[in-house]
Length: 400
Image (cartoon, rainbow, N blue to C red; front, side, top):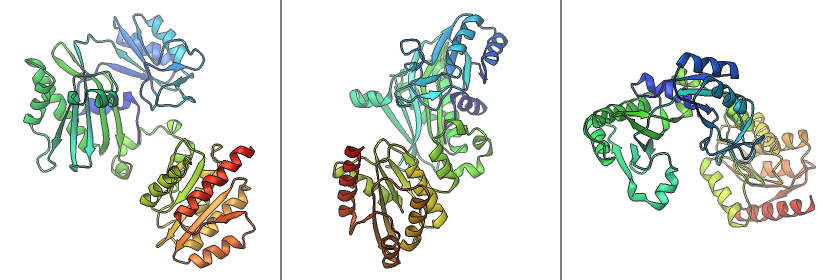
């Protein structure tokens, strides 16, 4: 689950992480009142969407204009910036060309920046440890730094038995070239970040840039993602969920205990098991196709959940073909077949449907498919299924 920048900063501040003063706003008037309350000589107005690259982005109503992060010297300029952002669609490199509508703003105090750095906290699956990544290249895409100057990124893994120790924090501070009082501030900063990461069940925490201003280390920007499996014990975090920022199909899937992620292709996939889902997407790519989604119905799905899953796939206008690939174990093939048939009839299936079934009750499942009256293309194995769906989707695309 993602949250907005201002929400991440509110959480981090509770753990002792230094942040610039800021006030969130849900309207233009609230943004103006926030600036008046802060009474600063320099303001920063930030669009709040679940995407990075806001400052370098553009609004669809003014493609050549400024992005979603603007410096303002007066309250009147804050009002102008708020009017230019609120309710407008912001396009960044992370939103895709469709962009996202700005429904929230964040007005912060402008600060003097002595130096910018990068800091993130992630779970390293290779070492099975929480790992800090820090770099002197702050304010830049860390992917670009990793590709062009990997030596500028330092990794510090934290043993879960001990947690973060002061020497870990000092090691990072010295690696960044900090000196004097800034080192002491950095130690406090890093240790507070670690505690926040652990105690909120975060999966990613990114501070970019992390800055030094008057020997104080501060989070100028903040991004936090959380483990959805832990939200039942993170009531405060769950309350920050902004459903307007979520893909509608992903929301429906989550509400029905389905694992769904929209992708950029045109071949819809419904599979049981995450590993099989990844393999299915890979083999579709191998034969020249592009998957439109990751969708795992899980091992305990019933007819209703399968029907919902199929509807989700077909509701995506980009989908020109569908591949159902089921290996029946706990999930029986006849249950999958019943759900697919029910959904296909309800939504009036008008794209090629390839089905590969194997496992428990496979014979019964195939009989249900064959007698459904639907134009279902049967496949004997995964390779056969991938080839058939890629070819059928290609023909459907050409005929459209």
